[in-house]
Structures are given as C-alpha cells and as structure tokens.
Image 1: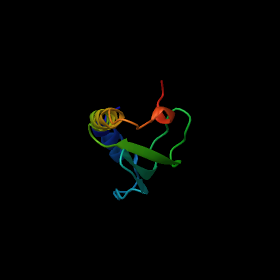
Image 2: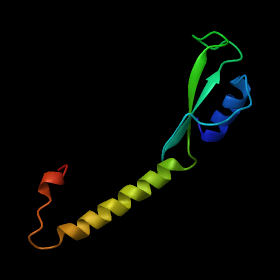
Image 3: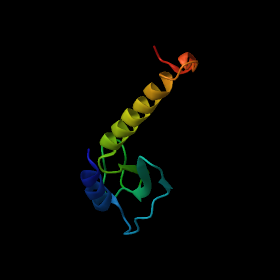
Image 4: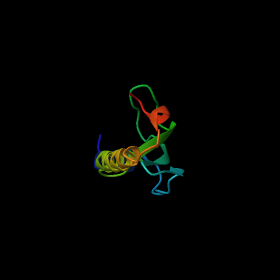
Length: 89
C-alpha cells in the first residue's frame, strides 16, 4: 500500500485528529491510532501502530546503494587497499 492510501486509512480509522508521529526515521513514520470500526482480527477501539513510509523511499534507497557501490568500486582500484573482508562475494 502506498503512503497516500495509508494516510487515508489512518484518517478513516483514527478516533482523534492528532497526527503527531510517535516514531520517525529515514524510511517511515509511526503513528498511534485507535480503530473506529472492527477489522479482521481486531475489535473497534483497539490501539494500533500505523507505519507510513515516506514517498518514493524505494527509489531513494536504490540511489543510495548505487552511490555507495560506485564509491567502493573506486576505492578498490587503489593499490594495496584490501576490502575483501567487506565483500559479499
């Protein structure tokens, strides 16, 4: 589910209009909520955590890994630098 759908779900299932995250990181934010209506295995009023990922996070993480891979490839070309212990090969 993309972040837009999660935000709509968060708004429709929250009992309050406060949207301050209880946790935040570089990939997502976590919100505390109470269900307004029954869901599959949870009755209404159950407190839940809702994780909303930042938009386009997969693309951003892939770019970060590409940059890291490029920099390490350049470092490995330097003579007498042995980074084999960091390799996954």
